[in-house]
Image (cartoon, rainbow, N blue to C red; front, side):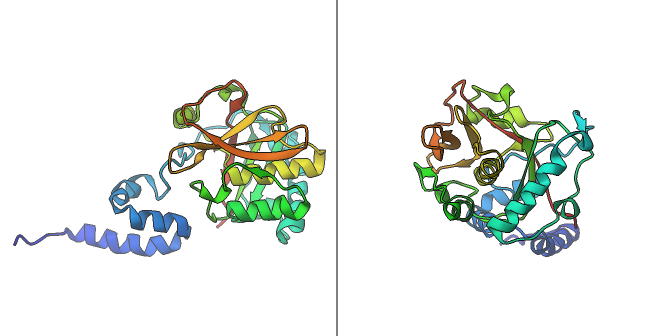
Length: 263
């Protein structure tokens, strides 16, 4: 039998990576995925341990176009989000201290969305059902990929009734191409749920009263992609899904900046 030879540097790196896997605090969903799909581990070591289909922002530091953060309404809405988090999540936080805020933002009307690490079901229970705003689920929201608990994060997206206009009509299967090289990633279902509920609390209006937002990172095993919108006649948020190649002028993505807590 031919003995398998491993370079010392490879062995040393493997030991180092083993320790770092604990330090990176991966979610249980991610860990279970790669335990079941061991063939994906070599690629994950090169690109980072993320679930298949996840769209990550460009790591290339680029000067962000837009406005100085002081010229936006970001700080006002951070206050709204902090009070919302205290009421709905039972968490008293200071987002400006917890996260490294950018000096500039692409939008003047900003929607900050704090996710303390909720599953999709916890999001529905805490930001809708507990407030008697029960959404309609055509499919159980826990059946989508990326529905498990995540690390705490803060999203910034444009506070607008419609998704990002440049993406309207784009089928979700092209999301990776559209977001390639950008500093933004598509807002996901959990973040959208928190954000639209916050908007309703402050402005008495959900997102997407006449449009739909795709969540290209939240898919079913058959490949269908999740979306969210509001049903204007009864002011109810709807979570549905459709084919990844479905394109319609009323469907689009919401691009978001995702921040991790300060270390």
